[in-house]
Length: 630
Image (cartoon, rainbow, N blue to C red; front, side, top):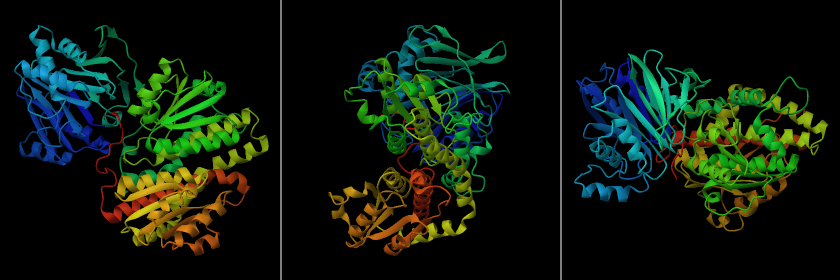
């Protein structure tokens, strides 16, 4: 969740640190800081709030362009142990050592008591600072800086990563990982990069090495050339690690004229669908839903049951995937929150495949569940958007979406890319198992291929549609609360719409299966409540409209989202957001694709409401992009 950046090399160290940390601002943070060498000594600048406060400190002191090869580290902190104050901000300095830390040291109380007995007096409330004192104690025993870091890490319990520099070892950076992600790379101009996310260094190089669980990595110069050396943190044995070439670009990380990353990423969804389809499919084959050969496909073909685990938005994608897979492939699918699944005793048959879904591939609870299942000999598959992520490496096989980098904290294009992947898998399994007829499979597949192009025109050329969403938002953004309701394929989208509104507009919003409103939630309905009704022309429409009438009769303000030709639904709604639907496909098939039209509507509604309320759309308060701690 916190952001880590480290650099030693031929570039201006403070400028590289600030540039990398700015790329990590999307993760969410409440304080920031940097440490760098000036005349052989470590200088630290840190502050509460945004990174611009640190940048101003550097500028005021004239250090923003310091040029040296001795290196530095930076950090954006999302508070866990200790308040979000300057004192608790990273980097922390203990003697000659400065460090930054991502994660939680679970046994910090025991460590703190031990260090206090030895006369150390930590200056912050954090668990992180304690690690520096552990290293000092190990150095007193005669260990080198690197070995002292390794020995200290063996005493730490919990999921975390630490990156350190020392005045006694200028030009060297040491990183160690046991959970929270860490990535390293060589600078083509001479140097080494350390970061918690590849986005921080993509403007310098796209060839990176993802630090494995339990790895210790040292960046330093040998005979005048920079190199990265990897070691097993348990044994100290030297390791060989390969690099990964990322297909990301600096341009894809820029706003490109949009006021917010979130809006840009909403509009990028059609392209992300095309890229994901090209990645998943073997287009040389003529069959409908022809999956490209890869290990993940073989795991899916052998499975008799599927257990999908995920958190947040990815869980909503999993819920919708269950509908598609059970309908077309006739395979039993269970969906559960990873944070619940990993702490109970699930009973799984040997022919069950456990699928973890995570946009970052680093979600702590989902990763923990995948590791537990693998230890029990149960096959695992990871679906994620980041090559080289922990999930991609630790599951038995990985299946990637191709949404590209997503900077906005609230997931948009990664969500619909997950949906598309699950729909394609459902169609492919249905065709292979002959539970989906060849005719229906081909017709559905053709429509899936047309969908990105249709949606691209819908978003980029339908100014009237966007203006309508903007108009609706202006009428309701001051209301006290929202209910999103839908049935069938629309139910997970109702959950996602409510989550988006909570995340970025800070409004109390709930998503419900429409049939459940009368089982309690309807007591909340009054004339200050907005109910967003998702009711496209599918098999559930009539039942949903009946539920609409129940809440309308109790004074709720109704926002209807349905087919543009559904005049009866429009007349029952106080405000109307139409869906223009292609005419050429049979309704009983197209109903499965309605979510791809509904999602941009609820995303844009939430976005516009957030803008009107003046919130920080891309970096909502208290939230982080990658939840790498429990």
